[in-house]
Image (cartoon, rainbow, N blue to C red; front, side, top):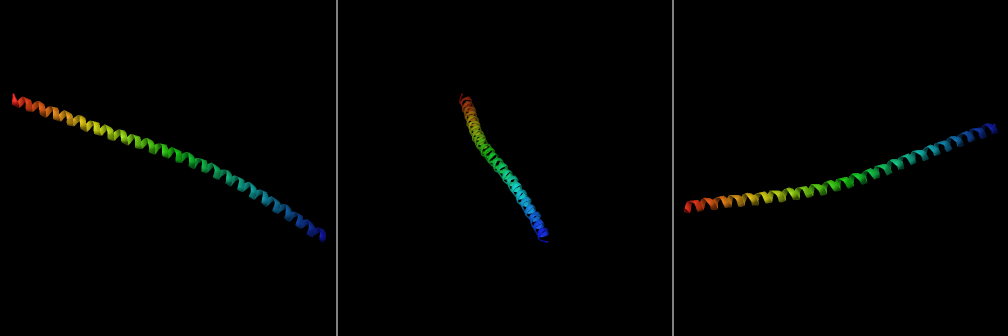
Length: 90
């Protein structure tokens, strides 16, 4: 009877040790996954910041181009009007 109880306790201890090992493995797997996700988040954040910087530069270039176009068109119109005025004075 004592031997049976001891044997059952030994089996229970072995089962608990197995559970502890499994929990340790699961924890390691979760920590590894969290590290991977943190690294991915860092990478995506960097990519987003770079994309935003490129978009800002592109917007500034487009605005500069539009401004230059308006100036060029304004200058061309002014020259055209001045030529017409000269023609009318002649």
